[in-house]
Image 1 (cartoon, rainbow, N blue to C red):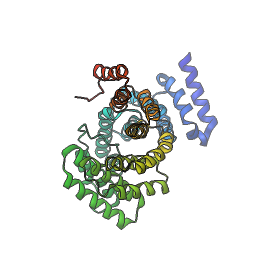
Image 2 (cartoon, rainbow, N blue to C red):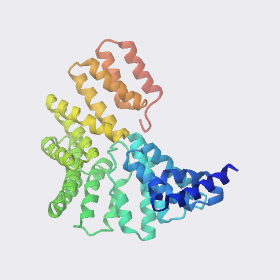
Image 3 (cartoon, rainbow, N blue to C red):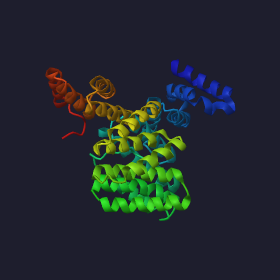
Image 4 (cartoon, helix red, strand yellow):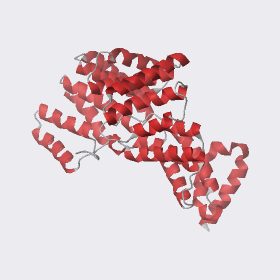
Amino acid sequence: RRVRLHARIATVLEELYGTNADANAAELAYHFAQAETVTGTDKLVQYSLLAGEQALAAYGYEEALVLFQRALEAKQGQGMAADGDTATLLFGLARAQVATLARTMYHEPYRNLRLSFDYYVEAGDVGAAVAVAEYPMPRASHIDLERNRLLSDALALVPPDSFHAGLLLSEYGSALYYEVGDYEGAQEAFGRALAIAEKERDQALEMRVLTNSTQVDLWALTWEEVPLKGRRAIELARSLDDPMFQVTASYVTASTLAAMGRRQEAQRLAEAMLAPAENLRSLTPLMDALWSNGTLHRSVGNWQDARSFLERGVELHPEGAQPNSDLAVLNHQVGDLVQGRENIDALLENPPAGAT
């Protein structure tokens, strides 16, 4: 009776909303999901896709996660045919996972990106396949996602000097360095991407290239150009209202400035990244902002402020190595050896996923 009632509600609401049905996709997806055994999966998938994309646009990542997972489970009952809906659901799920999982868990969203890409290629939808490949995954330098292979496959689908080639190259440079250790190859890819950005006069692509290249420079210890490139990327991100790249570029630039001994400049950037990180409501950028502020305060002996940021990081991600390890250092620095030892023991007893 309950299933039949949900089926009736779903049908009536869909008719009632008419041309505004898409605006009420989340409500319709819920009722069609409850009535799946009566109404089938088509409407469930249709409205879950719409509602999931709407949730992503509103930074409602947990809601999007549920919607995409539920629709994919329904598709699995049909054998997971390699069709456009399955590919789109996988792409949506991957984006929701990136926003809700820690970097050490990025194998899972990457697997879904790869499946989505392969499904689109098999279906002959090159444009959608390239859009999946060029999605800007946050840095995960400590794990090998083989993202360089995905990007290489995607680059073979587009003209070498096209705008989409520029987007792919901006990500390919990062993958080459993080996964293969090819610094020269990374710089060559970034140079080609930047040339395309200049040719197209596209500031969003320029921002993306500069942000990704500064991350590689930070990890490769080639810091000389990072402050200039990073500040340009931050400026572009602010003007384009792109909080994700603003936080990423700020984090990298602040980290580099701190390593160069320019702590006041680093502190200003770290403080400025807090608001956009909060607004994003995505785990990785918020953790980066908290960690950056916490470690900078700790480095100059502002113990109370440092503890506040680091403890919040631990609360957000109890298994996170960065906030836990820095909190352990802080407790030892202030003489609280018992608490510091407890922090270390907690990490040893429950090491972060992917730790060796």
